Amino acid sequence: MDNDDILLLTENIHLLSKEQAWYYRVLPKSGSGDALELYCEDGSDEDSLTAELEVLLGKNILLEQLPSTTVARLLSKYYLRENAVESTTQMQLGKHADDFLENLISEAKSLKSSDIHIERYEQKCRVRIRIDGNMVERYLLKNDDYPALINKIKIFANLDIAEKRLPQDGRINFRSGDHQFDIRVSVLPTLYGEKVVLRLLNNDATNIDLNSLGFSDTDLENYLQGVKRPNGILLISGPTGSGKTTTLYATLKLLNKETRNILTIEDPVEYTLEGVNQVQLKESIGLGFAAALRTFLRQDPDVIMVGEIRDPETANMAIRAALTGHLVLSTIHTNSAWGTVSRLIDMGIPSFLVANTLSTTVAQRLIRLLCPNCKTQHSFDPSMYPRQYRPSREVKHHYRPHGCEECYYTGYKGRKAVYEVIPVDLDLADEIKKGNANIHGLLAERSIHTLAENAFDIFSEGLTSIDEIYPLLFNY
Ligand SMILES: [Zn+2]
Image (cartoon, rainbow, N blue to C red):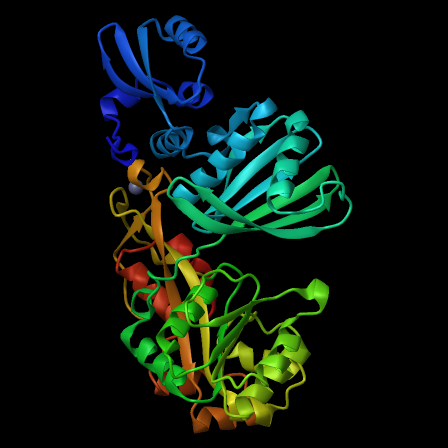
């Protein structure tokens, strides 16, 4: 039988407590009367495991070994606890740092986690993972085990083991079972030791599609107008982790034709796209965004993607590239689509140049969707909105997260992007030249939906909770 097909019966899951399952890394296969069949990890010491479990559970134990990655995946699926503190497992690594690391990475990937944080404090070390944007504590380690784990990571990432006082960056090409992807490694010396963050990258862009990211029909139409122009700048704003890069990759996939020369400078290269010339940012050797852009202009480009505009030099180069007839795609840190205009002007770009080059400005956030299997309906009280907020229509019922097996007891399953897309037409370009910060009237005239309005729609359809959209309701 394929290991992916293993299903545990609900009635058997209760035969072990979560703590027992995680501590011994075993799972109930079947139970009848006095006998209990358990899955355990390959390489387990079956004799001592059987002896201990027989005493603990008062039953005759039969063991069957499974690959440790499968056990980790099943444990996460069937025994993940709602509360972060409870779900933490006390780990003793000893010589098993290799296995632990491999399992940890596979487990994080199975849970669709984006980052793994390994941190040392005075008394303990902890491992947290980020799922759907939120950090969840996963393991506690003994301080004695910490150096071995960090050294393993450094070796895999080709970093200097002896260097413990300076930050280091590296990359791991991870292969285990069905998993194959790159991991960006960042090591930062902190008060009690080095903190390591592993960013699990998605190497496969085949499933990214502009149509399924969350654009409304009108927004997508407006967005594509900017994408189809031969020149100009298209900017996507939003905080880290708002899915900007995914939108950019989906856009590049659309533009990726034999007839176009596409160049990108990224930090990191998250997806690889066949046919696109992707360059990894390396500031330590002087290969920054601005330097790469300068070279790109001599490479006869049609489309240029710059990972992020974060300094005046890059902003200037990007504007120059757009002025000289190229389509430039990038991201920028601002709170709203229109805020991008003042950010560029703050970076020293004259407003007439912004007006001439900015073709589309987009704001984006990610919203967690309620698990459809366990969300619960309640009557809605408008006092739950921020005080100033005036909804466009009345909501009588809303849904709250609950938690079930399907959503790993988080109450949420999957995310959806929320957009605000402003195509800069001649009138809006005039407003940029005038330095007008308040364009709500003009947006309403053009039926452009704000982040708040689009988020409200998702909420009123019952797809997400008031808590998820609350911060966006101030942005209208
Ligand atoms: Zn659920």
